[in-house]
Image (tube, rainbow, N blue to C red; front, side):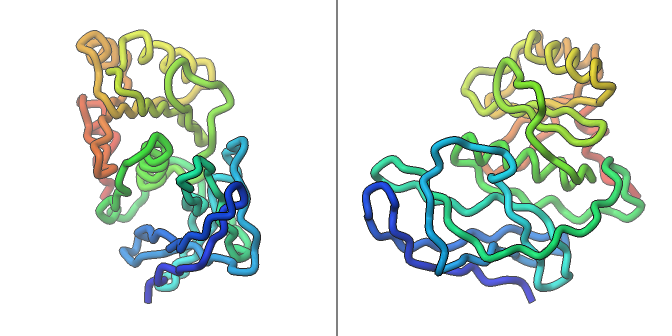
Length: 232
C-alpha cells in the first residue's frame, strides 16, 4: 500500500507565521505514491544557502520497499523565506546498482512532477535521468554557463530553466565539458532551442529535450529519441 501524504503545522522561523503543510507525494517506479515522513517534533529552518546534498531525502515505498531519493520538503512563506521542513530519519541507503541505462526489464511509464519553479525543472530532469537508469544523480562539479549541471557515472546533463532558448554555444560548452570527463551528455531546456543549437546538437550527437510544464521531457532530436527508448 502506498504512503499517504502527511500534514503538520509549521511555524516560519523568520516571521513566526503559522502554516499547515502537507508533504508532497511522488510516484515510485512500481506506480505507488510515496511521501516523505515529516517529523512534527523537528524544528523548521530557513534555507539561506542551497547545498545539493541537502535538497534530497531518502524515502521508502510502502508497497515494494524500494528506497529512492526525492526532493526534501520545503515551504515558501509569504514573507519570502524558504523553509525546510524536518523529516523523520530515513532508512539506511541500500547499495546502489551500477549506473547507466539499459535495464534488462521494460521500464514502467515515466511519472512526471509538475514544473512551477526552476527547482521543479531540475527535479523533473533528475527524475527522468533516474528513470533512464542513472542512479547516483548529483550536482555537477563544474557549473555550466546557463542553468544547472547534473551528473552521474558516465553522464553529464544540463538543465536550463530560463525563458531563453538554448543557443549553439550552450550545446557546444556542454559537449566539450562532457568530452573532458569521458561522459555522454544530455540537455534539458524549458524554453526550447534556437535553430543553430539543434543543428549543432545533431552534428555532435547531443540528445535535446524540452521540459513541458507537466514535467515530462519531450525529445527534440533523434539522439533524444534513442536515449529515451525503453529497453526490452
